[in-house]
Length: 127
Image (tube, rainbow, N blue to C red; front, side):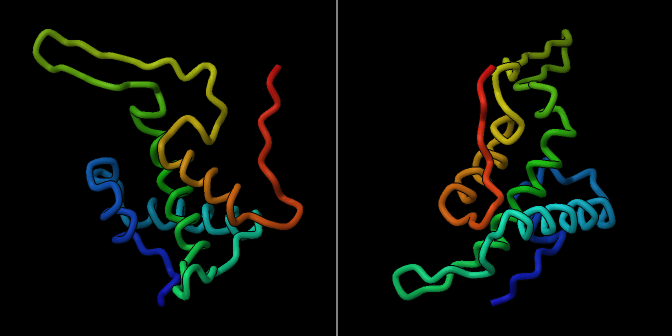
């Protein structure tokens, strides 16, 4: 099982979102996401029902895609655009914390709740 995340892995998971990104940008994002996943104490693999699940690889992929998503139109709250007679629709993200602002971040947060260990924990404190 290969736990190395490649730009092809990222492109396959979100082809439209990554279409305009070059290899170096994707890999720089992946490297940062990997370090954060490592710091969040994700295990390399976890055995579930006799099968190995590459937890750290999944966390790295989801967090990298979250970083990409929050930089694009999705991160600005754009839900739809129309070219003829320019039209743009937004969703309200003002009440969402950082990881909940994209589906990729929400998936990373779920993995963190299930598999993250050690001292690093993510907690939302409402103000």
